Length: 548
Image (cartoon, rainbow, N blue to C red):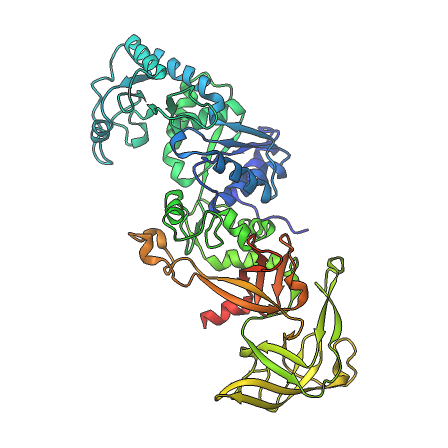
């Protein structure tokens, strides 16, 4: 088995273990339950759970549920399902709300030590006095209020005696710090909102900065892995750990977040796509959410392969979407059952076939006999894709043309005899089959350069195809002033395909390859009478064709 490509975090942990500084890592994946997870989260999931698994450590799933106005049980359930679907299981399940009482007591401790104070300025006033990157902030008039006064006011905040916006708890660090995050950051704010888990027990909630590091310390996290936008927050993370009587001292390490070409990963923007009706939900197959990718037909193994291929660095970069598609395609090539489907049919009449349709036993995958086989039929009337016939073929065209020959995969070699028209348009291709050229039994010695797919007209079944393209018309939609201006109107095209009988049955867990077309997955909208397939990803040569 090939070794996994290393990266700086993996190397650091390996060295710590070698030097005896660490027995095994304890990591965590800490999403906020205010939306569905997206492909960027998949990178973090694979990193945190993967490192714990590799070094015989532990990985926690912790919900950062400190902002109840935007959080819901729906998102919590979806996140748990996504982590499991990707193939991981947490060693412990936690919520930041588990620690609300401890965090509150630590906030009281900071006030008592003179390291925090209650500020009764308005949010606008606090914002106006924060300063800029080149100018220091201005001390709050409440900064030096007596400890007892801050304690009493903080107690009133907790008791629900003050309205939202009337006061906040701030750390007392330095309003002149060059790092804006250290300019007396807010630790608690008043929110008269019911909490999904805590109910009405609280009306003040800790900020992410105050809850995050302390939650790590409570859980004994050794490696707090964050994306680069939190690098400027690390001094504050460490300030809290130094000032508070925490049970452990985790270390924060940053890595570059996943930026994927042609997508947006802002939960606010993704939510807008859903609420404004540009997509049909968080699991719409055009969405970069894990739920959307799953519904489209991406495999968890393919996503994990993608995360492994892009690696972990500190250098920000944008990953081309075809790298994700390539990883999924490479995984599905060995996983998907293969079948034949015709999307734009043209009738083929086999003039020398007089018998009933011939049943052909065809394996679902030539390298996976355990997948079993299906029955397809060869008969007098067939359909092939219109693109597989050219009256005036260009150089290098090895499909069917006037006077030419082609092999029908799993069937016979056929020779073109005539082209019939109706109202000037091609209606039927007349061919003759060579009975000595049946696949697997061919001893004729005939060689043809082209092999195409087909279906037998009488037994073929119609299925609905949802043909997905990019959701946006630009490679960097996040920069657009309004997403509505860059929505691709052709991101979903509805089509009908004619498939061999085995593809017309409900099998929602299976992955499929329509030979010479692409990879597909049955959509949950499928019924016994109307099977729906989503295009997962096209074949490799299709991408190359688009680039030429």
